[in-house]
Length: 60
Image (tube, helix red, strand yellow):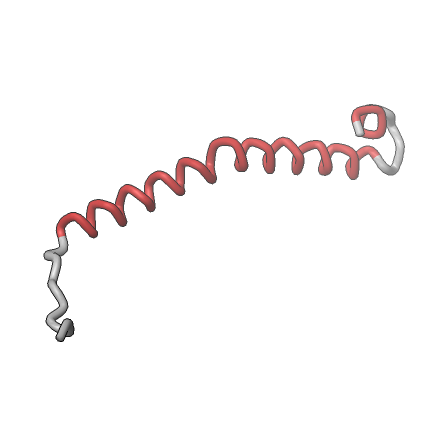
């Protein structure tokens, strides 16, 4: 893609868009997705610890 993005032709914008998309997707996969998972998981864990545990009385 680099030669396609560098050379002055009609396909240069396509090459730049592909490179930008690959860079964004790689960064999102490596940093954004794990960060968001950690935030949501920590929030769910905090909510579960704060909620009282009810014993089911269905055992007979």
